[in-house]
Image: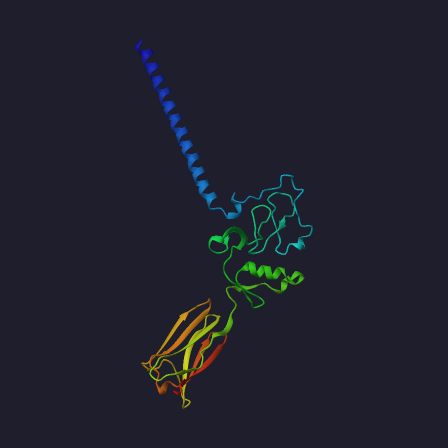
Length: 284
């Protein structure tokens, strides 16, 4: 009797242990499913805007009868992109940068993505979806023109038609260009004992360096600032890209400061100069 009771107890213990084991396995499986679902949810939240469900545009309910498939690939200046509805065997025309887009019927061309942006100012803003280039870096074309991104270059190439091979990427980054005077120093008649300022703004790539020279009334030229304690030079980058600005400031104008002030902008391509005259204002 005790033997049967012992066997029965062991069987009941094993059955209970097995039930507990299965419950733990089920719990682990459920936890794993929840974890994967959570991870997938995070991934989905980081997907490009063009793949989200925010778009109201959907595939046509009447099949592909209303689909506007390009009959000739050449009409698509920026090439063909896959048709998500499967209506056009060869794809549909990709849209250019800044054009309004959606995930289904108005897809962006290659290297572009449909992004959410706001148009307007203040309370009159509205949310739109427009094509934006994935690459933000400037490129130098073989036509020695700087394009804001590779999408702008591709668009320029597409407009050449049969002459597309005339332009290609020469290298990434802006094209090298000679310095250009954006703002030149201006002639000034100063008052003895008062401040006087000359400014100069130059653009180019590589970004130019600016130096100043002074030629006095006797024709003697020297580099500034020299050892003049009444004179200071300030230089900073900007206000635009690849631009540098510089000032000559005379804290107390004296007769010895009368003359010609020359701004020199230099990079590896060339040098540009601009001059202005500082004279004494005639008092009436």
